[in-house]
Every structure is written in structure tokens, then in C-alpha cells.
Image 1 (cartoon, helix red, strand yellow):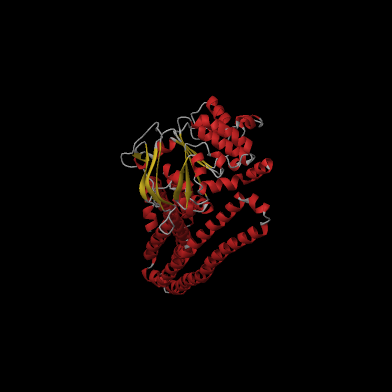
Image 2: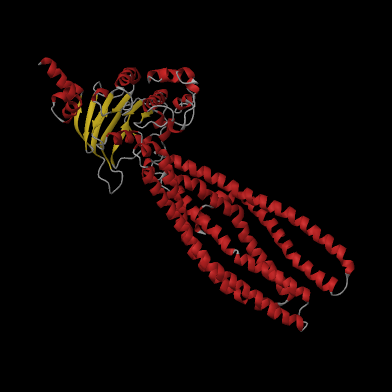
Length: 584
């Protein structure tokens, strides 16, 4: 029950629905137990004693009882559903909000399909238990308690003789719960992996087809699907072992009842109607106990699901606002790294090692180096996507941790190498970071990003609705819209992470020309593999294995005959050969 205690904050505020459902459940259960008593009166008083004038009253009473039970059942089920649905509405919102604020480090290891499974299947399993499983569990105890009381009223000795096998049944049920809970947790994990497999395959379908790996993906899915099947079959095996034993122990009670109850009727200690009523009441105890496996099934599934939901809710947000964080409307954009070291995990090598540099407001800094040299890591520390292991990152002379996360990132425009667009209109995508932007500002941003021309050629222009992840646009077009989105936010600091890698050289030249105007009075970091993208920077930092190995302007670095010179020679060697041929 520890899981339910931890999740209490989500369902306990709606306890009024739960207690209303409980009251009417008590009424429904009490009425259910009345049925055998009416049957007993009909047999002992009407049939055996000939009191036929009781029949109309018993009939009317029976109809009245059914009407009351029907109304009570409606209210009980409706309020029960209201309790479950309202509780998980808040829980689902909290989970989604939590996912929005979890750091990049969390998503480095998380699987999209598994997270989707938690927010859908696991939340639904928890809701179903709140709406239905809770009431079933309570009905189980109420029906047994009330039936047991009526049975004692009819015959104390017959009650205890009949129920002698129930302690053994309880032990079997307990062992069943111990076995079935880990099995259901395994099912949930396996389902999450299956979802991840499907999600990754659909997202990467172009890669799959281009490399003719359909057979591999089918085999991979079959493996995940097979694991899911095996987990379910293992759970079914547990059911198959325990349920017949529970049914056998339940039938032992019935046999005992018929044997000893028949003896009591024969010697006059018990009326025939009471034996018939007793038979019905015994089943009111046996069936809930036999169906306890189903209820335990629901409980186990909801507990396993609750544990998976708590893993999200309890995840460390890590990057949080300081107590007295600063809210700033506009930053000047002076950036300084002071002996910064970064390790993504304790076991990883240092992504950055003792990085120090200072960038004046409005200056342009180029970052170049091999893949994994630490270029993107530097920009991710500026935006507080990660925290430095040691050292400090300063903006306008203050540690970035002193600013509120929202106001800090509002002042930073980020264009990633892989441009992500939402399933919405082009206009909504460009203004995503600044929803209040006017149409003129959106168009101006698109023009600066060299996107206006192709947007106007689309059927609905800026109102064209894009498919998932920008489906329908080329890589270069998506990248230009992402650049327009960054420009539209009017940031103090602009970060371009290989932002023109998907466009042709001519478009890149036009974008860079437009960028010079955009970069005016903004601090800009340009990550690029092409020297042509950053040779006009005020300073270029050359990185290798997390260290700055060279720094300076383009012309100076070319004269140093260092790493930058080698990169330049590799990229321009064909042009050099052409010039040498022409000179010869």
C-alpha cells in the first residue's frame, strides 16, 4: 500500500466522491443480502405454512427493493467513476508538467515509447482500480461481513463448519498476490519496451526503408512482442496454478454446507428455507473470495503502474530556480566561462575541461572542432540545460544559476542542427517562442531566415499546416523555419548549432548575410563544421577533447599552422588544387 500512500495527494482531495460511492455501495450490498431472506420467508412462511396472503406483499417488497438497488447502483458507480477519472485527470497533468521540467540528463536515458506507455496505459490502469477495483475490494469485505452476520443469525454451528476451509483459501490468495505482482510489473516494463520499439520504427521509417532494414525491424519487433507474450503467459501460468485451488477450497465449503445443513434440517434444528438462504449466503462469501484473484489482479496492475508513475514524479528535476532568482526582461549578453568543467555522469569522461573565456556583449564567437569535442556542451551550459561539474558560467557578471530559468531562456535564441517543427501552422511554429508576435514580425523573421519566398509558394502560405515533425518540407526548409523561430524571439544571445548544415551554399550565403544584421547588438555563438560559416566571427574557439586548443580570429589562426589551419586545408584543398593548376 506504500504506492497508494505516496499517490494519496492526487485522489484524497476527491474523497467526497469516494465516500458517497461507499455509502451507496453499503446500501447495495445490504439489499443484495435481503434477497436470500425474502426467499427464506417465501419457503418457510408461504410454501410450508400456507400463508399465501403474504405473496402480494412479498412481491411488492421485492420490486421495491430492486428499484432502490437499481438507483443506488447507478449513484455508486457514477460517483466511483467520478472519483477515479477526476483523480487521474490531475495526476496526468502533474506527470506531463513534470516531464516538461525534467532536465536534459533525464531524457538522455529515457525512452519515448516507455514514457508514452506510462502516461497512457499505466495511468489508465491506476484509474481503473480507483473507479472499479477500490469499490470491488470494499464490496468484497462488506458482502462477506453482512452475509457472515446473517449466517450467524440462522445457525452459529453451521456457519463455522461451513467456513472452516476459508483460512486456507485466504493463505492461497495471499501467496497468489505475492507471485502475481512482480509478474505484472514485468508486463508493464515489457509493454513500455514494445511501445519504444514501435515509436522508434515509425520515427525512423525513412532510414529503415533507405537501408532496406525492414526484415531486421520486423525481427526486432517480433522479439519485443515475444517477450511481452512470454510475460503474459507467465502471469497466466500463475493464474492457472492458483485459481483451481481457490475454486476447490470454495467448493469444500459448499459440500460441507449441504452435508451438515441437511443433517440440521432433518433433526429440526434448521428450517428448509433457512438452509436455502444459507446456501445463497455462502456463495456471497465464496464468490468474492474466488473473484478476489481478479481484484488482486487489478490491485497488482495498479500498484505496478503506480510505481512506474512515481518513478517520474520522484525524478530529480536537478535544474531549478534559486530561492531569490532574478527575473530579467532583457540581458546585455556578456558571457563568461570561469574554469568550467563538465561531466555528464560520474562514469563519463570530461566533456569540458577547465574552459575559460569571456565574450563581450554583441560579439560573435565561432566554435569549431571534431564531433564530441565539446562545442554543443558549451552552449548547453549557457542555457542551463546542464549544470557545470565545477566552475561557473556568468552572464552580465552574474552566475546563470541566479537567473530564473524562464527569463534566462527567453533571452536566448537556440537553433539546433536537427530542426524540430510542431504539427501546426507555419505561422504558429515561427511564433512558438513568442506567441504575441504580430504577423509583420513573423514575416520579417521569415524573410531574414530566407524562408518567406518558399512559404508564399505553399497552398496556404503562413497558414499551411505541417505534418508531424515538419513532414512535407525539405530539411533546408525546416531549418530555415527554425532559424526564423529563433529570430522571432528577439533574443539577447543567439546560438546557432550548425544551423545552416541542411541548406545549399547559395542559401547559406544569403542566410549569413541576413544574420549579420540579426547579430547586430546580440551576442552570438556559431557552432559550425564549415569554416565559411564562422570566418567572420570576432573570435573563434577551436576545441579538441573538451579543451580549447586555439583561439583567435580567422586570419590569425590561419597563420598559426595549428588545428584550425589543418581543418581549413582539408575543406579548401580542392580549391587550392584548382588555383595551383591555373597558376601553372
